Length: 458
Image (cartoon, rainbow, N blue to C red):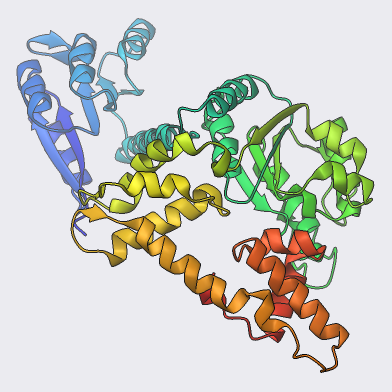
């Protein structure tokens, strides 16, 4: 990749001064230009990107500080360092007010100039990073918005706007794939602190022994292998948002610690004694019925009420089929990768007849597969969906797993048939099937591996 050179302009009527500074700044990654008058300076600025300018206060045709508005009009990020052989407090004030980054009095050592320029270029680099982050933040804000025209989505948009303008905890509920992550990001990027961190953790994806260390960090020597201090997610998300996905899978002991963080705004690293401030907005999401989990004593009732100051429920896609056309328009744009794709005639009607057990995530999956596998500009995802549904249903028919008449039935056989029947009922969705039979997702995966279950049919 071609490396972009930094551009420096020296504006001074002293030609010997310009030559010596230009020689000092000469480098492979630097382009140095010289101007001896205000007119030459503005002419160069109008035609070139100038990162850094060394501008003399007294030029033959103007005073240096009067050029600043025009220079910055060409490029607002240009860093201007004023130089003058007649230093005064008034001149320094005028220069800074006009937009100067720094002010040097002649004569000065080249090392002094080098330090001032290094600082100016460092600030310029940070401004460009911030500019890029703001751009990405705006794009995130545009992309992470629940899509649809249904009344349910309109209500969700209203609640998201209310949540974005508050700093209270938010609890988002809904089936797997219904868009809880999108709603959480929409809340974060809709608030006034959207440039602050957004950190997400899936409570079901990490072993119980690691979740606490990931959330709260640990001190050196807190446990075997803790060779250095590590900050937790609550520390790293300071001033921003932490998104706790699948909060219903969080261990009970850790739920108590999370409740303490929400109540007093402090936390402690593992092995630490010093309380750390945790000024973080907490958004939690779950596909589990927490009220049932409370009755089953797997989720704390006090934490449920503390998290649910603002509650947002995302209905499954089958309950808002009128949103499918708008979702298809947005998702096809995302999966097209620059191609001009559209749905073939009659496809929307077929897609709206399907129940979508995997919700929006499943819809995106089938559109992406169609974009990859099918030729031409017209997509026919409904045909792929029908074929995949038939194929997935074949090995999952409970009748095929029943023992022959007169044969003995073991407890393992009954368990296997029950699990496979649940998978059939829930169209191969592992999370929903696990909840239906009352086991954890990891246990279900382990049993399916034992049964040599082919997950390519999901």
